[in-house]
Amino acid sequence: KAGVTQTPRYLIKTRGQQVTLSCSPISGHRSVSWYQQTPGQGLQFLFEYFSETQRNKGNFPGRFSGRQFSNSRSEMNVSTLELGDSALYLCASSPVASGDYNEQFFGPGTRLTVL
Amino acid sequence: KNQVEQSPQSLIILEGKNCTLQCNYTVSPFSNLRWYKQDTGRGPVSLTIMTFSENTKSNGRYTATLDADTKQSSLHITASQLSDSASYICVVSARSGTYKYIFGTGTRLKVLA
Picture 1 (tube, rainbow over the protein chains, first blue to last red):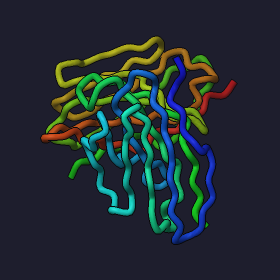
Picture 2 (cartoon, rainbow over the protein chains, first blue to last red):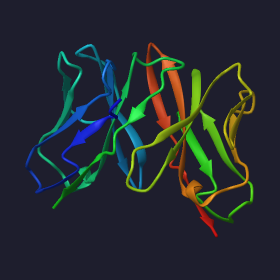
Picture 3 (spheres, helix red, strand yellow):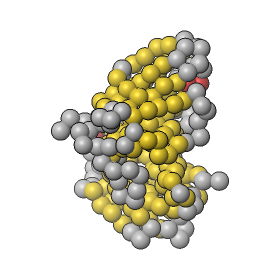
Picture 4 (cartoon, rainbow over the protein chains, first blue to last red):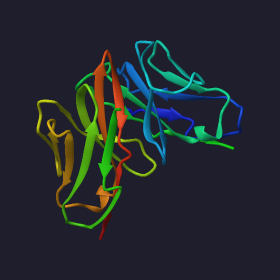
């Protein structure tokens, strides 16, 4: 089975621009979660989608948004980029929604640099 | 405030030695605790998941313990290998309606030959 794939792997943008990142979960997985990882803050949860519905949301401004399609693929959008948005953005998929024993499988991440 | 603190921040050990990483948390209401291993440039990989009622869980040379009373967890690595060099991240989930994931900042482990 193919793992979680994320595109693009690397991205350079300038302040004020917007960006869209893509995540394809493992086949059969219906839950996709997004995380931001920075050296200073570590991993932070952005949001979770399950069956095309946002099920859970972290403490990020409205500039961060996402969606999930009927084939479970997900996109994350960041508008009006700021320097502090430079980070590794990770996507994780799971067969089921958040729960005690749901195991998440992470993709390799998209490295976003904002200049 | 929900927090997860890990110690040490970084650790260097010789190949073949054992080591223990610590995770203290103040998360409520507690749902589960997970340990992840993250190699440089890659996404995290799950090592163990423990709920409130579990004290110990093993995954090969990795053994995690959980003391829900003191809100502490540890990850013990036995007979370390060069491939164990990575960051180890402790994540605690809180469930209050929906799940919240609180991440520690990780322990960076370096295993030397």
